[in-house]
Image 1 (cartoon, rainbow, N blue to C red):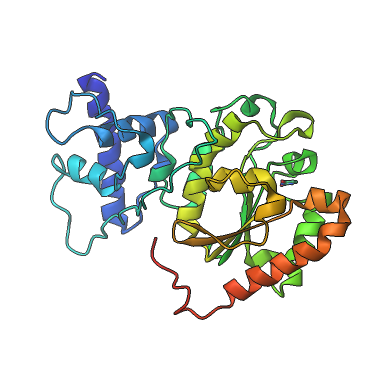
Image 2: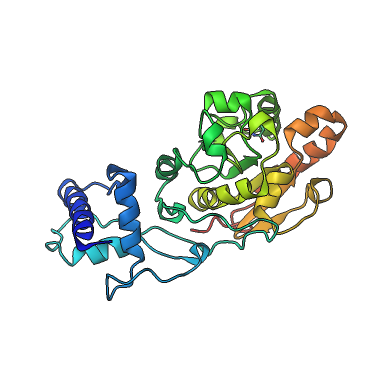
Length: 307
Ligand code: URA
């Protein structure tokens, strides 16, 4: 990157920061376009000394780069902040859970999901994602929906035809069953957060390939970090194996209480499977009772920690 580009990037950041200081607003990185944002992320990765040196070759999974690092460096060329100005909140980045060994490495990204400060921001950054081949065939990038402070996060496999059309998860036939499973626990669909392990529809509703799941995993991981649910309910093999390092089939692992970082994770059957094999509805219902018990357990037993 040449010095003129760096100057332009810093200029854009400075203008955004001054706006932030002047208006007491949160800095909205989406105000900068994606390529500018990528440059700023590149700058944020530079070591503090020797800004022309390339960023240290660290695996992306282990990076911990608070947004304040960007502003701290840019602040060298800024006037001191006026009294009463709001600090830009640092982005919390927890130690990522090791990716399941069954998944390949995620591709190198232009934008780092770990730097998105909110679910909305994460959605905005990745709505035009082309990190795997599914980007070419989709109508919609189906990010997820629901309560941004939900204690229950429901994760499916990938959007189907109807989800792709409406840009919403679980709105087709299996979506009706998911809604029934949620309401059977005595909670409303609107109060939970629902998404899929893969955000774009695989052609012909085939199962997503491992590399497609791997490409989406950092995004899913960041969704979990930002939401901080008490319980994650994974529906079927794909969602479960996207997060857990187990190769155990859903038939064996369903209903067990697993740990995903600081979150509890309970796998159950995928609703499409339940529609084809209603004989397993009884077990699915037992799993929902377990989810419900964990959700309503005392705060002391399951503290909602900050990350
Ligand atoms: N619809 C979704 O959104 N996800 C699935 O896994 C299946 C249908």
